[in-house]
Image (cartoon, rainbow, N blue to C red; front, top):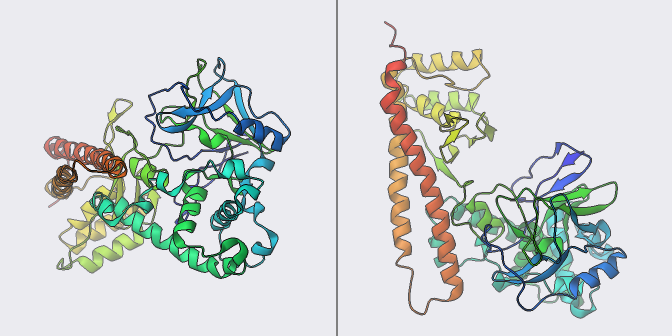
Length: 473
């Protein structure tokens, strides 16, 4: 049995599958702006013709527990009757899910091996959109978000992106847009072979379809990437335990209620434990407080450091890309991801070991000190500076260097947040106002992480020095 994952940042990597149960578990994605703690009742514009259409297409009942309606945040799913924890509230057969398998054979034959499944699924969406009412999927395709309704950062203007320039999300967005453009030019010759369908196809059209195929609604299962009609109307609750399960034996996807619901209460699931940066990039919304927020920082060895080459060689030999330490922190060479420093089981959880090791290497002042670190790594698991430096003052110096970095970043984040107050006017459009608030949620969350790291470092430098070994000799 495999545990699958939502497609996130697929242009860069795929999350691994892990063995767990006979079902393949996947996390839903949907571009929503809902607050995960707020429930809304159906009050108007019930979308009550979609489910009957889907059930006719599937030839089986999809759900007798749920209905589609409009909440303050758009199309949502509500309990049509009382639900109990453990109820199977939704079953969508694989044969009414859209995947790259739905790509027309003539189009598929023109696709080279370099074209990935996500791009192929985007073409499926484009094809069905171009078919309009003649598409057998028209009732579903017509309900997918339009370009103006999507707030993923790849759709932000340059001025809007300037609001998040302080965050690493800015560069991630730039990189992603470039990657999507590369894929578009790779498939464009094939699309131009079918002018009757893909006449005057533009990058913007492909980008919207790609965002739907990867970010807003993508699932990964043993059949690849797919869209699951009806299930993708469910909104996100970061505290929910409900996810979407893919049963390979029964060839269907299902949702199990994780708590009781009253009639007309919105039913929510969890997309994943994602930071606001991921939520904006992949889904186009943020949470006012997101406990999964994290910050990516970079620390480099100065060019004028006389031991620079030795330090780089040592780090290259012992610091592997994309390693995770025991606390789940990630690092890659001189780039590190830090999470909010907080208590875990009564014991304070600090900064990533890899970041602290980098600082210790950076502060070494002699070749002998570097050799000592190399010996220590060789005698352990290969990683550097798993233990404090024997020279207490040098250990403090390494952590003061990190504290200085965090302090500088904190000041820069505060300045960026204050600058958002200048992005205002009486005539500000709803879209800019919304994206400004998303930028604020992102920066405030990352600032909170930095402040927690600074507090931890201050405490470490103040209280840990006396416990270190004295410098030998």
